[in-house]
Image (tube, rainbow, N blue to C red; front, side, top):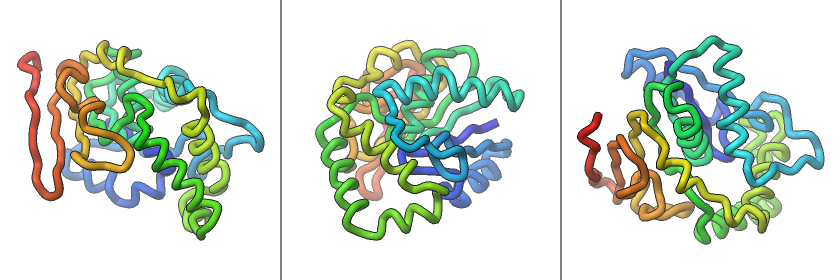
Length: 218
């Protein structure tokens, strides 16, 4: 089973047909879901603000509860952006509970480039039709956008980091990070040398692909 964990403004619908195509290619079943506050899942209550540990709570509480309820044991996780961070945290908290993880552009800490990009997203949301466009993917676009945007711009979130947690990861890990991105730097990603153990790492520069070393313990 391959479980997909969406990005900070993602949802089931925003994945489009990618999960089906990947699962068909890999010959596995897949699970795609929207986290609370996103997509067609229960909206975030009005006025509720997510705490700086919201990704830790998703990994330690929400995802395990979902997998237990569905009877899913030892899945593979596929996470993008915030979902990638949640996948890394789950792998660090429950090292025997999954077969492996694939993470695309996960956040390891809060960088200035990330904050600047998210601050610009706020301006775009307030001044353009972004809310209407997000309405195609979320029952309550305000729930999805402000839950994500406000916590990332909260001063208390600036010290958030999972650098220590990911050192505990023991499962196979494929980490993919763009060489140039508007949300994070390669040097501070899970795919960077020293990020975590038992990993195969790829970085992308334009159309080219570079690969870093792979652990011999696989």
